[in-house]
Image: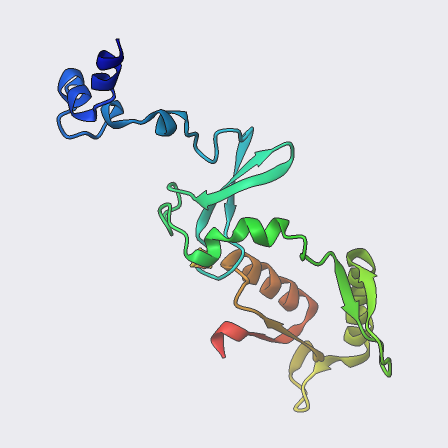
Length: 189
Ligand code: SF4
């Protein structure tokens, strides 16, 4: 019995017996590799997403269990990246779930000497109030030559390389609707 077990543990014999001549199938599985499970095995569902890091916009599959991200990998259905992610894109899970992730905004008031922490909602309210005030105070209906302008030169927008095409499209649309004409992106400078 022990000899038979020993022989069966020999991959070459299993290859011949199971018709797996090149040793690419179950014939070469060890007890350990048989018990291995894919990282995504326990995921409850998958969400299609876009890598948040750069404007290439590679497609991602985000695996979720109990409402938490368990794994992120390239989406083969993406015509842009066809399943691939660069090392930065592959680290997206850490970006989303790191204990170092900031959920507050650091704010230093005019003449302030210390950073204060604001909630995202509070910071958004402050930004909206300032845009409305500045736009009203600096609105130009006409240029100096008397031509129609309908713009504000008091507000500018500078985007970063992490913005993807869709975000840039929406930012440009919002700026144009507000009469903000100074719109630039760091990736273009
Ligand atoms: S950071 Fe990498 S994976 Fe993410 S969109 Fe850019 S190239 Fe693609």
